[in-house]
Image: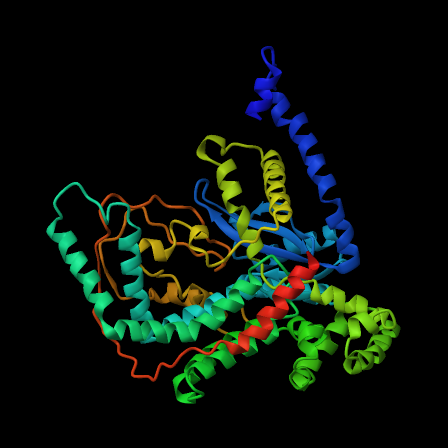
Length: 533
């Protein structure tokens, strides 16, 4: 833009405040709407997913819910709504979500992907009750986060993580390595503690133990939170192979991973195990023909039939799909050889396999909101603010799609500055999701209300030391009232943190991690992604 101004020369009349606020902004909104027209056309052909997630704007102290629509062409930002007064009211949240379904078109919506918090759970059930031909699906990325948090509570893993955070915070601090002044006694003690941790043999055994338990799940998280390819056809197989990889890494000695499998199954059975995941598993040719015995089981087929019943309204088309399923089961190369002879099943499969599994895309416009809604601009009219966010966020989505860029959910450069790994302490609110769960499924009473009534609070993790005054806890994806505000970095000295020095020695035979189970799935996923490009 600066070059163009220079080429124009003297006499360039800048736009007035009125022109920027109204005609130029509306013109840009119209341009973005035109750019998104192909996405809207695709919704009617392949279906789409409405994604919703909430966060708290710390500048204006408001709770905001973002609404996006996802399809194979990418995500489209629709709008954001302030819900400060109804943040825990499932009925009001249901009304907002129901209005979004009406706007996008119920026939176009296959699923609604929302958070796993108790208020959203009830919202999803209300939506399914009113609109029986679409699915409510919990966010897979959030569910995997909760699995990893559960594993992080194991004594050996927890101690290893605390020490790693202490070491990482010291190394990331700007003044930790080079200082023009003589080191203080505090810095000397911190350095000695750092050296002690690094040289502990038990510390590295605990690290190896933690990696064996978490690495397979992190691979699944990378897949469901990425943007290269719709993961619906792979998540079911990915979870099975993750568990197989964990078992193989401990040489199938069940006693060493039995409790972890219980943690994974508890989250999977009540949150992540959905009919759409089973249908995607069955309809994905890359998985179907590689593991036919696993695919054609009662659990998977029950989920498939549930999807056919809900998503296909015409009983005649349902019967045709059932007949065409036999063709799909027996074909060695079904998509290329028999796709045209089973058009009903083909259209149904395309709808299912085009779906996302995660609502994490909603989180990526938090920085856009914070850039626009600063203290100087906090009196912007809501309509103008929505227009500005609509333009900037969808422009950013278009640029990312053109670059074929994808967000890496575990890349350090893309982690918030207030993240616990950079702050050097563990998040003390990891139990929020459990506290927000219903005490009884048929009632609205949550454990949070019980704790408040009893005056009880969960203790924080066993980390002792001075807290950084500007620290902000990062709870992305853990409920509607979350914050992504970036805190200030540390000063020139390393944070003083003393950890409970427990050398929890995991007396295990830690053999070489076997990742062979992942090779086929990763190859299939990458090849399918390259073909789509």
